[in-house]
Image (cartoon, rainbow, N blue to C red; front, side):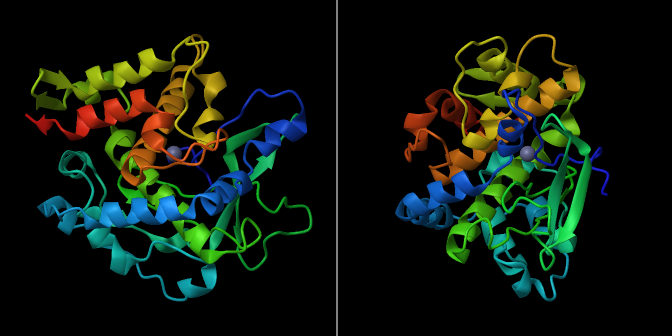
Length: 300
Ligand SMILES: [Zn+2]
């Protein structure tokens, strides 16, 4: 077992009706099938992302990557040789806010497998790391898995096995989506309090605001909204935590997951969703506006 308490793995529990439905909220296959259906849009989104001018700042140039010897056998990954080029294409404000220090491939050959309760729910503290060579074991579902992890300073990619989708290109694009998602966790995870977020002061054409002000706009978008928009299929699984009365930590995690998924969708112009909408702005314009507001601001 791996203790995930101090990390933000992508965790959730949807209050669906049957144990089977609850467990299936963790099924990654529909997201990979979405990518397959919209592969040209993913290719265009990635090409656009990489064609942005590089923005080189010192903190980004100091990010290190651990060795990933033997990673070729672990399925597709965003590899260390590509990391500097990718990081330099992140919006400048986000680079300046990011606390990323290391991309650590220690989990590159492992799959975080959730352990389910009889009612189909799972505890984020009970994630078992299983070697890609052993997965799926006899009792494992082949695609109900977690992927990616960050502690705010470190991004730890994990494996995406062939049994989720046979095409390594499709799996690579999902790995890239996950990398963008985890990158935004390096902006927000170590600032999970009003005090910490209020320390970040930003300026834009419309005035001065704090990261806390910006975060509150996300809270308003979701709290007790009976019909909220979710950026992605994955983000939607946190829907039941976005109501008044949810324990504060769970609520904050659920908001963070919305923001990280929106950032990934915004940067690629596409994110897996069950409405099969490939145009991310059309899918979630309000969220795109909030990301625009942050990335066009400057740190005061
Ligand atoms: Zn996450």
